[in-house]
Length: 134
Image (cartoon, rainbow, N blue to C red; front, side, top):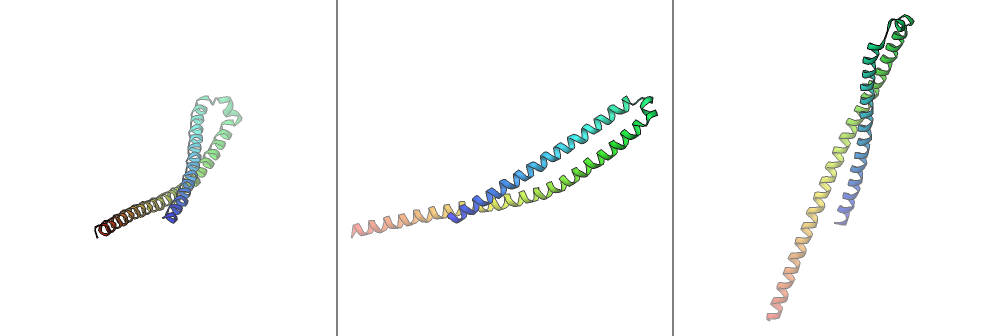
């Protein structure tokens, strides 16, 4: 029974590690999505603010080029994080499954052990009762 509890503890640590890893990736995803949304908001504001003077200097073209490069980089970073998140989610589900099985086995073993102990005590009590009668 002690071995099952130790295995269960180890699997719980593995599950917690997977959860931490997944949480970090979710935080990265949230940050990248926020950056993309902020970029979109800046783009909308810039479309209103661009005047003919900036257009004459070519600043609007440089701005749009920077905007395109930045958006592409953020989207590529987001796609990498989403792929990593999918792998981490798979690992977290697997770790949770193993933990659930180990905990269930430990619980069944403990119940079986308690039942066997009660049965043994009852058998001993019955034997003592029979010995006292004789």
